[in-house]
Image (cartoon, rainbow, N blue to C red; front, top):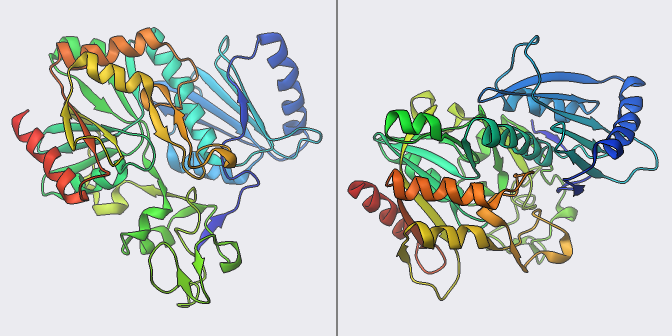
Length: 390
């Protein structure tokens, strides 16, 4: 039985990330009025020592929130807050952030992805300014005691390569989306340690396209925006064909849902459900930083020094995929500085300092790999080869 919820907004809604306190208080009054007049839910999450509180009236967002994060003590002091009000009349789906007080507001959107990313963004703002902790949007895997961070725009193979590393005998998943690196701790230890705040993986279900075995795991997980009708699929070909697989449509094969009919459908999967608890790590000693791109002209591998890596990361060029922005922009080039759309407070100087310190001071090796001209296996071999020399 599929546990699936279809949200009114299936992507991020329009937002303002720098709302003055006076304007924010006006908006918050409208949200609180709605929440106080209906059933609502409250929970606190511990994101690596930063307590982020959720208050909202969406059962879906609340359920995902509780499954996603480690719970904070009820009496702990709140560092940041998300207020999410659904069903507010005369308000279009939108999101607002007030940096003065580290609070966010969501109106009329139950899509969990933006809620999750803003929780991470608010925690990052607290950690970067007060605890000298770098927040990286990337996958992190420990391989025989050596940590790899993969930073890449959507659609270049980040999750695929993270899976390949997990599958090797000594591979263990830390996280597939976010990494915290405390530079104060790094100075004391002499090396950088990556940690993640999430106990579950918010996975694109389209990954099941090339991994049939994921279907059973997704079937047993909470899902969001999975297509349950053939009429809503954009990839049908002829009476029974599928443009993506070249095979029969899964609906015509007797299945009642398709995990890859929409590029932004998700499943929230506990880390241990993928390969077992022995394949999960809570931290990794960082030795390798891998940047990915996908095109038909760049070399398969480029070794980067700190200046080169910062140039690539700061530009953040990527192809906008379905679900990652307005529909009219899908297929066009976009720019996402530091490949981190979660940063609500974007400090370029601080980001440059963090990455320069990582590569130059702590001697973390950095590679830029092109997944557009080589096979998945060839790219994986390059990562494993680089790890051996770290």
